[in-house]
Image (cartoon, rainbow, N blue to C red):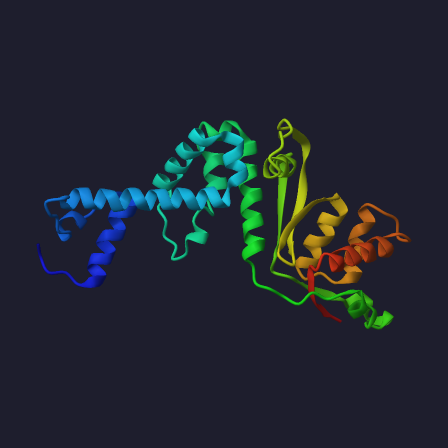
Length: 261
């Protein structure tokens, strides 16, 4: 066995764990209990098991939806197609929704990819950095003449995603260990907001105008142009009231972390 540096050993070992390939066999000593190949295979098997456990933690709803055997199979396929390159195991699984949407037979059941996307959004908001949420009292301090120029900074612990399928309802039933409803597809995409309030991930669907308003505010649009955009759904008299209602809701959810007037 040639003399190797520690970084070389680490790289060779990591390559073998991810790809079952490389020169690691020649860098490992065997003994009477197990030769080098057997030792590597033991480590590699434990490595895959740990990744599957991480996916189980991230995607409990998907696991409950497809069952033990099918979940184990899709995890093994995902691991083989997407070797982990992250320092933190919390990041592993970030591409599962895209994998399910593009890989047969899972792509024949698009609710699976949407369930994965929904669960990943929950994980993202749970792991997101803390921020100080503003309240209605902060908004009342803004003089009326400056409301038109209001812009908002939002908390990092929020995600938006568009879903056709009723996966949030299915997930909730599975989480409560209840019989889930049948998977059903809406005719149009529904925007869902997922956020963290204190330590609890929460979610709700958004009406079309609120989804647009939130997107506009997140992109840096001010309150005046937000009201103008809402004219697509309500008249000029009701647009400011509708916009103000959205702000109260977002403040109540703890979504707004800053106001620039």
